[in-house]
Image (cartoon, rainbow, N blue to C red; front, side):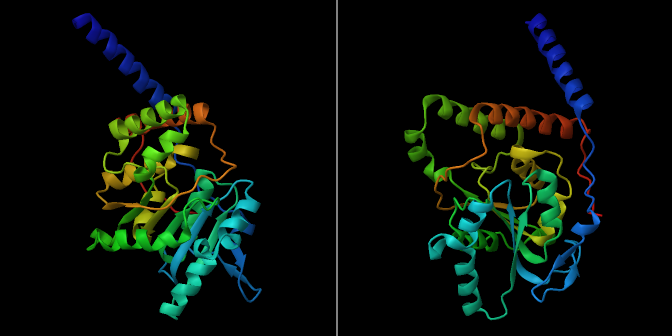
Amino acid sequence: MLDAFSHFFAFYSQVCMIAHVTARNMPTLHRHEEEKFFINDEGRKESLPSIHDPATRELSVVVPSYNEEDRCKIFLVLRKRRKSICCYSNNAEKRDPSFTYEVIVVDDGSKDQTTKGVFSSRGEKILMADADGATKFADIEKVEEGLKNLQPWPNQMAISCGSRAHLEKDSIAKRSYFRTLLMYGFHFLVWFLCVKEIRDTQCGFKLLTRKAASRTFSTLHIERWAFDVELLYIAQRLRIPIAEVAVNWTEIEGSKLVPFWSWLQMGRDLLFIRLRYMTGVWQLETRKCN
């Protein structure tokens, strides 16, 4: 028994050392000169704002995109009316003529570029939404209600996550045994290592208050697929209240996720998230976009 414990401790120490040695500093969020401005509705050049400035819009929609021009068009305009951003904004403006919003399409979809997109947001609330439109945009009303139910928000911070957990039984029937096994393994690792409150961390439909977005995104380290988990792990560590809200979801062709290798990378990232924060290699420090 003692010998087995010694072997486990030696293995654990090696894994911690690997996590420590391979850890990278937080990437510098530097904007090139051409990224510091945008062309406004009147055709004039205007400085990009900072999330640390006061909000000037009701809602910012941040859409990570990687070679997804066609899917972005579908998401923004071309899907059935009840699913599009345009439809939602028109209805919102009818209810409240002062409603304003913006859509920020992130150019390459990687974590650091997505963070830049969030840091340039002008909205009081910030919605992360996948470019494929798998979640109906009308479901923003559901995540908005989830956000309201968390009030009062400590330090004006709260997060409402869209969730597909209620659809799990139906999706299992359509998946192979191998993919189902990978899914359950990933869910277990997320629960065991990082996030215990949320069943579906990977649904790309999350609504954050401006303060919560500023605090969590300014601390992110992970790139690619597991950054949602680190985002919620950070929120848990900071005791930011999180709601999980059932949303409609339809699988859209063209996913960039390669089941085995992508999930293997995510499993590695989950382990390193826990170890690097636990050993102090990563801190809950904040940064600004230059």
